[in-house]
Length: 268
Length: 181
Image (cartoon, rainbow over all chains, first blue to last red; front, side, top):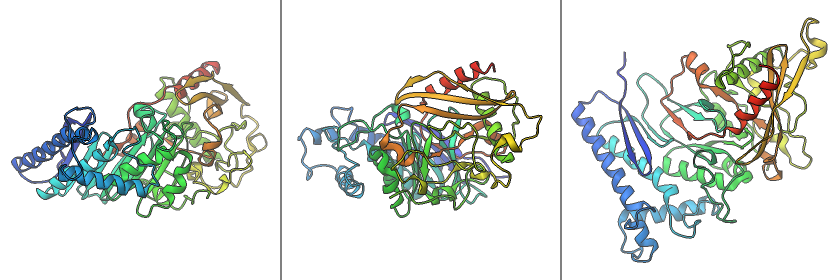
């Protein structure tokens, strides 16, 4: 009989970040690791929040801080933003709102780092869930993979897929959670063509940003997602229609989906 | 075909239970498959394979898997009227009210056979426009939490969001009221 996970929930960055750690380490060691991870997340909140006037991001946005003077973390996020903008054909745009707001990458990136902190403390098997965007490390005891349900945009307490995911990340961007909060940087209008995009990838930084960018792409999303090596994805429209990659179908837990090999490349 | 129909009935029952209605369908299957947008046929055709959208120019036939494929390929003819036993009650369809929501309008059609729900489709949706035709052809499964739990499936995590549109449920509810459920 395997023991259950040690769990912790932290309200931070406008959401709840949940930790579930599978370990036999002593309680004090787990506590120390979780404390460091949680402190990191609060530091990120203070530094990157667009809602806090004194945050470093806002000082940078107001021109009070040059790119050369900012913290190594902000410099890293700035570099991430330009990399992600190139990788998404401009659909990931930290300046889409007219001011610098890297929130679309900061959550995924900070959760990845929080997961790294746990690994550094020897906690190899854990889940960090940042408000529905999930970083998975190691494996649950006795299991080949993590079982991850993908919430259905239409039906309460129902899912559009149940996945068996080895180490990696799963992110969902949707218009159904917070309304049309993602802007299409090319039109300046809220993205409204899709209800949800779920991306499975090696890390949450890119999976989350790609899901957000794909949501902004609308009908162009499947063709773009299909070309992403190493990432699997599912797209759901407001009508409950959808598309997913062949690899996404193969990730589905036994008895829950269309099964392997049923996917197809999107229409070009 | 028969198993596809049973799956559809079971899943419809699941969704009805979700909305607080009592269902008479079997509880063995676990998903609802919505029919293609714009369809007028309430019955999943051709062995449960969702057909491509009928709209002209979009090359939709290549895209995406049909989630209803978990049902085995049909060997029986798809026309229920000819293959069903003579005692099978006739099918009747009930259209729910047109509900305005975030993305436009949605209207749900429920097809009953006797007291059983055989399909739930979305025959009209104001949000379906040319831009989304490419990915509009395949229904996404709705896997009921309760049914998954009954199978012993436990999740380590859930990805997504908590806010959901109630418009779909609202139109479905009115269709079921029309059906006298």
